Length: 293
Image 1 (tube, rainbow, N blue to C red):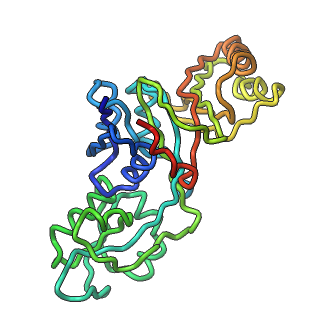
Image 2 (tube, rainbow, N blue to C red; image 1 turned 135 degrees about the horizontal axis):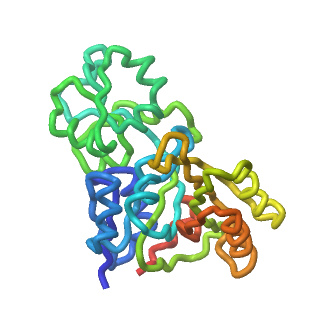
């Protein structure tokens, strides 16, 4: 049975590369969507079976639109996570004359890619106007359609396979430890080989009139020796100073420890919502996932 996979597009994005690593079976069909909300809505509306979207970058932090849509707009469980090394590359359209940095008037890319290559752009292209696009691949597409314009794009290497482009400079990212975490969401389960690393992600809403509530929440995990890898606050959108807390737990859901911790937290008057319990992969661990049909 064919599965439709929505990914944050257009073709040539890092998200597409992540999707191809996870979904490379004969029955998987990948479809680009213009925005992250469009991807998530496609699954919520049963137009796609799964969606692949970016969640967090090691340099720029959380992708807030992904987090907020998962909290406020859709109720889709996270089924898997994959971390990918991210390279940002400077590209030009296929042109008759070589690129002269002094003549470049504009650099196009997604805001996160621009931020990740800020030092290089400031040093070598200080005169260039920065224009933000909905994705790095969209920047590549625009550049490829206007090859003689004095424009460059910051884009992933995959864009070279999709659009008529020329590599101007490889790896202009400011930090070599540049990774992005992508998540796969969907209503149905996802059969994948074991990654050796598991996570459970929850959303906790604290009572407004309980001093020290967050400390008590963390203590429920601490005395059970449950390791937490990340805690993040996001606005509840109900008033200034009101926050949800998103907590990453370094294990899959079990029948004893986590239910006990959740019950203790709820007894404090907090609300706990399970966002997903899933395997976490690194790119080099996923070469054999072609058996996923």
